[in-house]
Every structure is written in structure tokens, then in C-alpha cells.
Length: 142
Image (tube, rainbow, N blue to C red; front, side):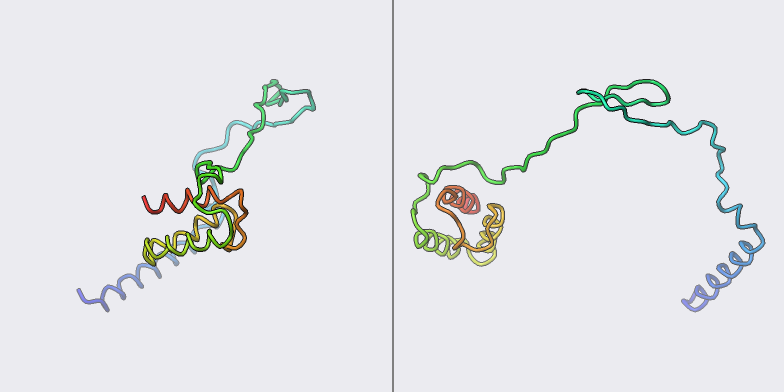
């Protein structure tokens, strides 16, 4: 069967479907197949001391405490004493040497380490974060 014949057959099927849909009242498309029997539960929250209480369909239910979230640590905690550099020039020299050792593809991941620490530029890294930067770059090497 050629492509043109398939297109003609599909077009005829779509036209027949549209004609058939036109003969069905629009409400039939939106009528649920299964009737809704139970009324939805009404939920109200009462002000109370911890733990809070909710009333679901007239029955008190103890509510759990709201969750707390903390930012995950992307890099292991390292003190600045473990980094082989102590100033901005040392950081730049180390990162450049690491970039050259890793090559352009893997070296580009150093930017991800900086972003993970909350920095966009190597010059913004604070001395207290030198250890974390060193650990992140060394992890790329491993």
C-alpha cells in the first residue's frame, strides 16, 4: 500500500469519526462511566497546640509535624588546613594546574565544584572554603 493510499484511508477514517461524534450529544463525552456514590470528605483544621488536629468527616485525626528540610552537602566537610594553598594566587595556580591535568572536558567540571560551593568565579572563594574547593577538585581527579 502506498503512502498516498494510507493517507487517504486515514483521512476517510477521521472524517467518519467526526461525523459520528457530531451525532452524539456533547454531554455523553463528559458523563462518568461510574456514578459517584460517596460524598467527598470535608477537612477542617482546628487551631490547637502541637500536635495539630484535623477533623475529617467529624473524626479528629492527629496531624504529623511539618517536615523540615536542610540543604544537602555536595562536598565532604574539609578544613582549610588540608588545602595546599592559603591565598587567592595559590587557589588560581592550583585550579589552573588541575584544569591542565584533567583536560578540557573533565576540567570544565571544576566550574560545577565552584557552583556547588555557591561561587560563580574563582576569585570569590573565601579562605574558609579552600578546603572544600580542594576536596571537590581532587574528587574530579579520582
